[in-house]
Amino acid sequence: MSTKRPISTFTYRLARLLRTSIPLSGTKQVRFATAPTFRRKVAVPIVFENNRPTWAEISLRNLRDNFKSIQRYVGPQVQICAVVKADAYRHGLVECSTALQEEGATWFGVTSTEEGVQLRRAGIQGRILLMTGFWHGDEDAIIAQGLTPAVWENWHLVHLQQASRRHNSSMAVHLKVDTGMARLGVLPSNLGETTAFLQAHPEIRLEGIFTHLASAEELAESGTGGQLSSFREAVRSIRQAGFSPKYLHAANSAAIVSRSDARLDMVRPGISLYGYYLPFTGRTARPIPKVVPVLSWKTRIISMKCIVSGQRIGYNGTYTATRASRIAVLPVGYADGLNRQLSSQGKVLIHGECAPIVGRISMDLTLIDVTDVAGAQIGDEVTLLGASGQRAINAADHASLASTIPYEILCNISKRVPRHFTDHVAP
Image (cartoon, rainbow, N blue to C red; front, top):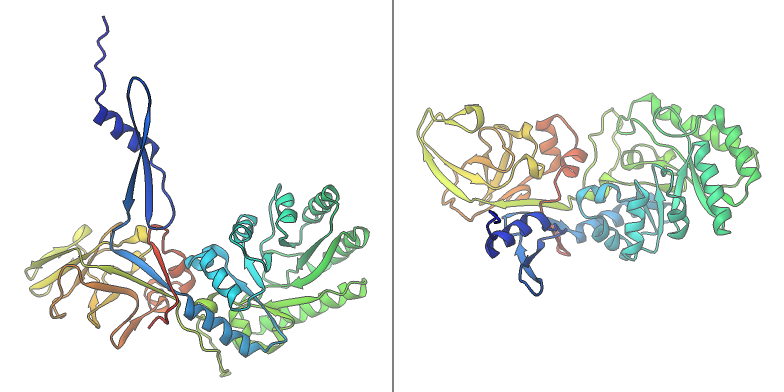
């Protein structure tokens, strides 16, 4: 006689929910539970809205305006390769690229073949530069999707040449030259081997040559001039070998401002498209194209409590109240990308007023002191990044407190923070 008990429909459904939940991007998750019957299984869709009150607002209007500002600054004769790698610095790869394409962008810079394919499937028609090359096995997708890879390793050229032969096609590449950053790129001393291969295999067309500058935001730093000199020498050597590349490019966001001699035929703005620059250092003052932040980050108060003077707050009690205080709880933490270094240092905005973060930021929750914010209550909107009233907090402010750079602040905003896209100008 069997000792097994029949499993209840409720238990079965719960087990199936836990085992087969399928996370989707955006603000919804769809899970399918299968109810057991003796005759058939019925798929029951259960739809959940992501109502957790923490979100990011992306102003595509601000993004377009930043692109136009940079284009005016470099002039119509200079091509812009809009850098949208890393999910457009976490602003949304497809949405931002689509907006930029509508604004006239014809080149897009990504990290990987995967990102390039994602853009093609989303309808991006412009040229897509794989700025950090590709990996073994990507060659067929590169050709099929019309992507433009950066190359510098011999095996890059061999794999692309073999793939071109299989597809009976030619393809354009951009050769990266290491001019002193010692990261990626062919060394100038090894250019002869590279040009010899390209001469022997004309199906691989050398369309561009580029390099990357290590310290362009340091205006008095001599290394940038040395890198550009090395780059010019490499281009001269390649031209002497019989090549006439259409595009020469070296300037990132900082170099667009700091080095007019680095703009060449193409520039590659990244962080400036999203409203930021690294701080410029040095004596030379230069005009800077106006850009404004594209991303705002918001949440709401979900709980409130009053505490007495001397009460310790949060993990390990690292903050002690010096007065009777009203403490609000925010549903956001370091799992969302709020830097833990902002603990008891950072501020948020509520009702146009500043409120300090108190205690340690935890994985999902952050505490703020709203004692001095009149009328603060559960449900009130709180700004982590962006403007409220006459005040504003941006990624550079967070970066300064966390001893990092705006890039990291933006890129660390996790995917569990829904992005809401708007065509309005962000304040």
